[in-house]
Length: 232
Image 1 (spheres, rainbow, N blue to C red):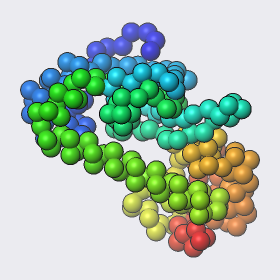
Image 2 (image 1 turned 30 degrees about the horizontal axis):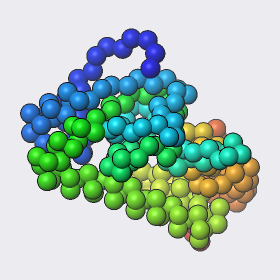
Image 3 (image 1 turned 90 degrees about the horizontal axis):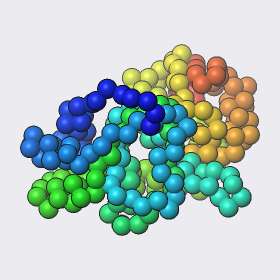
Image 4 (image 1 turned 180 degrees about the horizontal axis):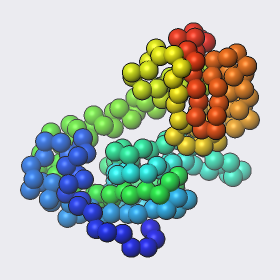
């Protein structure tokens, strides 16, 4: 949100978003007119819990954390948004204020699509509504999986599951592969419902077992099959 940035081609960016696939050029142009770009520097807060929601966000590049703060001041990360993902649609439809806060974990560029433009498009095009529902259903499904994981799986199983999900498909059963954690360990620990100490302790344990080698944010996996065996 600082400094001046060269203007971006909002229409071109909207065309590449799965949600808007199949919309005609004039429909994209209509939505683009109600879309504004937001540049956020690392650490910037995009909105606070309780702020009014008057549209939804699409992340072009960077990384956004959705989280809430307990009365004691500790923080729970609900979701880490990556490039190409959208957030805030459900709250926009419910006509409620935000229930989380959003903070940039890296310098980011977002598009904010106004609620009015979305509602106009929904009236015009039924397939747009189906796509929005599909996107929101996927998010809900992922959140259900998370709740199941927190409730039924040990911390170790959660971390191994997370590492396996982060692997590119090509490395699904690879040897000597590596992944780079998308953000710092504290944020990931909170996302997995673990304290940072517990998260570090498990990484240490997996290292002792020879299942991973930790090098900063980079995690080397000598054998994916062996790691999978430990998932439980």
